[in-house]
Picture 1 (cartoon, rainbow, N blue to C red):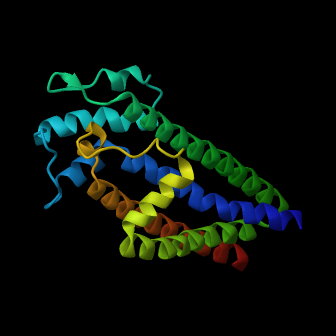
Picture 2 (picture 1 turned 135 degrees about the horizontal axis):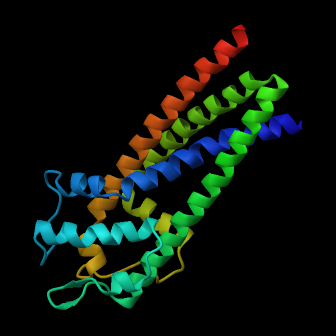
Length: 220
């Protein structure tokens, strides 16, 4: 019974680890350049392309580092602060959510390694590999359930996501705010698609590699 629970936790660790990796990839300069450079991506009123990228990069890095909020407050555009206090508070909240995801993924990742070591000593490493493969397929299933929601009603999915993670009234801003001009709805739509693609690719790799590993161990 305990072994089954341990292996089930390993399966759950896979999508969490892949999600944490995906967040790191999306919160990066290369991804920003890719999205901003896509044909048809909306321009930001009052910003040229170079200004937009120069201000978006430190804003994105803030999500995944330990910089103080004062660094966001110091960002300026057209002689005025780029962000209001409410916008900075929201970015702090976003960082807190990302950090919690990372901490949870790290804990599950450590659990996955510890169970793997125990499985190797106990002679049930194939079962451990099978649990990883199941985690890969679980990731793919979750994405297949998520994609229709994004495709059919992205606005609703976006709203529900924020309502789940943030306090009411802390995440909605006017269209002329710095946060919305730098990161419009199209940015988050593209980010959602990229996240799904990352999860699909990662889940498929884990499922296939771990499945082959398990098969090889079972043939011994």
